[in-house]
Image 1 (tube, rainbow over the protein chains, first blue to last red):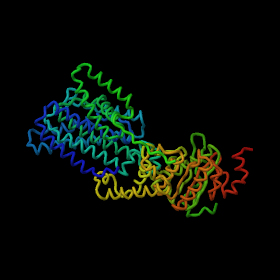
Image 2: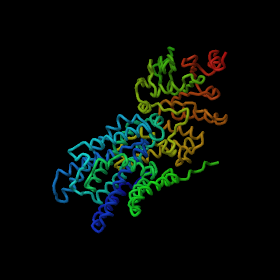
Image 3: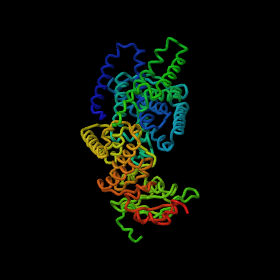
Length: 310
Length: 258
């Protein structure tokens, strides 16, 4: 697939997000917040899919990158009082960008020394990194420590959430659907062969980490300005696992599937609210059943392989 | 050895590598001229694949020098050496198994890309034109090797022989000056071997490249190589034309024992 109309699709995505945000006043706030969560989870899952799915580097530190973005963006916007809509939009965008960039720097710092590790070892190191980030924020009194940090501006809306989700999908898909980007999958399939075929495997892995972390940081900023209150505990290891589950359930390296899984796994706990205390039990059971019946991912359809001619 | 001309494409001089106490390759001189087909043979564990790994930068020699096109490759990373014009296949097939046949070859074309990652993100006309031209060149290569009908099939779904051929096509996509083939005849029957010999000869003539062939199979090696280097326990024990090597008592001893 050449992915020819990518830019057109991106514009359509941005336009729809804008339209949706104009009509947001008529939507019940609870639904609105679930929609924000969906958009944020799409960004998180699709960006993690670049690292875990396409490049095959099993990372468990995505919540850590998200935390960097969340706190950075929140600290920036909290410096300002009430602004007119245009200024507050520009401020929000700048804060999200700053959060993303700082998270990308964190991705680079984790990526460079750890990418000689493979599989389980890399998973453990990224897990440790995520926890370190969390503990750092827990001990930073400047941002409230373990008590959490209030975010003054509830700037997150449907336009930002889904517009940036569209940008994330565009960037990840564009990267992968190019001759350059096939290198990510080559690294996943066989690192030795990739290196022998002229692919700078370290550079590809670091790129995946940096781009993935950048968007996790953006998602963190959106999250902070949607909840308006963040605690280090919100970015713990379980949050990273939840994102990994979306990627695995959607199918590693299958962006449409990962988007669907992010939507499904955000809605599912909400739908299960009536069963109260059994909610997470049912949620876990559903995951187990899904993994047993669709281990390749819920939304992966294998194309039939053409038969070899006789 | 004075014939070791300046214009050798590949020139390894006194190369030694040790793994712990084991000297896997000892004091090896090896040269490959432009447009030459050289065979590297020897019993199991003689160090043939190690030589490949030294040339391609997977291992670094403890002593000695390896020159390619007049410049050293020692200390270079494998991907840089590939970019300079040495491509290889593997003894145990190492394709990008989940990628399609087309994408396996296409991936290698990133070596010849004009644009970089920004092109891929912007997806402007320059990007689309380049992708189209790459697709054309990939299909051209696949057609030469009669793999075009599998273009959209995952590489792992191909038959063993086709996978071997695809690996060679993928290596050729790097537009190498020197192609290293590591036991391409492994696991092939007699008629497949005959095809393979024809194929290697064809590649050498059509793409005007040098080939260094590691092979166990005497039929293949004797059939196509212009010059043969025999290794045993990491030491070169003979070198010459196929007929000379075949009669060399040291070679017979290495292969058949006393």
